[in-house]
Image 1 (cartoon, rainbow, N blue to C red):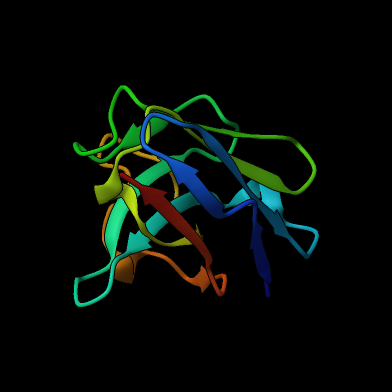
Image 2: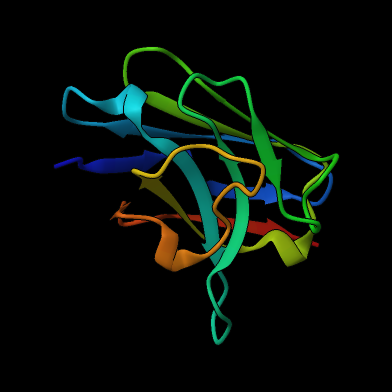
Length: 126
């Protein structure tokens, strides 16, 4: 069992930056692909980014590619670095863990992830 807790959300102006953190409980953190999703009011949950178990691979959604980065440490934390933020980035951001292995097709679908955090709100003002 893995429990995930996000932090770092807040209010930022257009063009600003934020760094989200997700701390995982449990001893098997480095066995999981870790991902970030987001959900704006009235919209589906959208894939943002994922990182492989050893941190050597990363995948990004088209809407954030080139602006966001993802990283993880060996112990228990995964980070989402968000730069050049836009009002359309406003959403609740969720951390997620997937127990499947990294492959040529990293997981982007909500159903591919086994564990979820409760989310952290990011608001970008225009």
